Amino acid sequence: MLQSSNFWVRLTNWEYWPFNVVYAPLVPYYAWQSIKRRSFFWFTASNPSIDFGGMLGERKSEIFDLIPKKYIPETVMVSPDISIEEVRAILEEKKIAYPLICKPDIGERGWMVKKIANEADVISYLNEIKVDFLIQEFIDLPIELGVFYYRSPNEEYGKISSIVAKEMLYVEGNGTDTISELIIQKPRARFQLEELSSAHGSDVLNKVLLEGERFELVSIGNHCLGTKFLNGNDWIDKELTEAIDSLAKEVPDFYFGRFDLRCESIESLRKLKDFKIMELNGAGAEPAHIYEPGFPLLKAYKVLFHHLGMLSKISGENRKRGVRYWSTKEGLAKIKEIKLYNRQKD
Image (tube, rainbow, N blue to C red; front, top):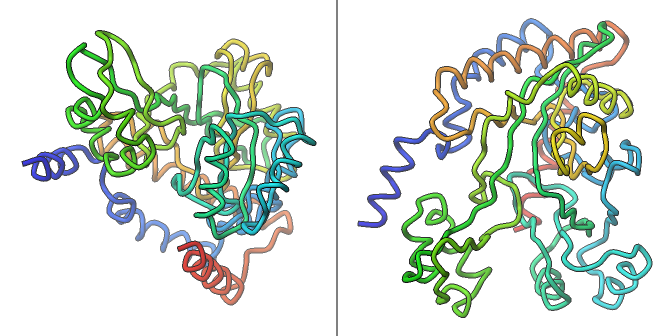
């Protein structure tokens, strides 16, 4: 019965559909752009300073090196064979306190991104991770956003095309049911039941919450981990656009992508105060406000086609400025490298 309910929820809410299913209608348009640009890997010219344009397989550590330090959390890249003693030394040297974030240097869709509460969690993470990863300061600011920005290389000013606000996965108590029972009652949480059971353990899951008491199940703002994405485009105005445009221009040769950040308020972000960039995604980024529950599918495709068209336009204009597209040989080698990495991480 539960499986049948999950299937029906996924079927009738396209935000849960597999990535390949959602993006299939864009394949002919991508093929047309490839013919138009005379290159299958035309997108590599979109963000010349980011490996592969930021479509796939880019290292987060290299992107952080492009961003002024004042805008990012304290972040250290380490190898998977690091010892707990070495981790202790890094945390002391960099003054990174618990909780903190660990995430793969190359990763996508929330894989192995974890909030680490204590040293025991670090040890558990070290036992599981098989690739280079980042130890990152946890930013405890109340609002998490994904702000999509693009700018034509021929134009002085860019624009914000999407803002997604992220509501972390939680359950709310009724004074009777356990956290585990509340999870089963909430489809968005129920899809994560196996992961949540592993993350929290029976002691937590058997707890009964008071009436109206909230319990945050996941502290990572990723749709694949159950975060609810909300349309924040009403916040886009001249002041915020100018602020993000100014911020984006401080990143060398960045023209298309999404800032994932935390801020104290929208007003503070408009003044570029009290915020931190947790990640910067390039050509492979999505205008994630379309994943708001109930967002019309046809309207979502209009947004996706528009952004793919802008990616092509920006890449073409950079090509005219002397930025070359990756060759087919280079692009296929990169894809092979990504496949090898994916096998390694498993």
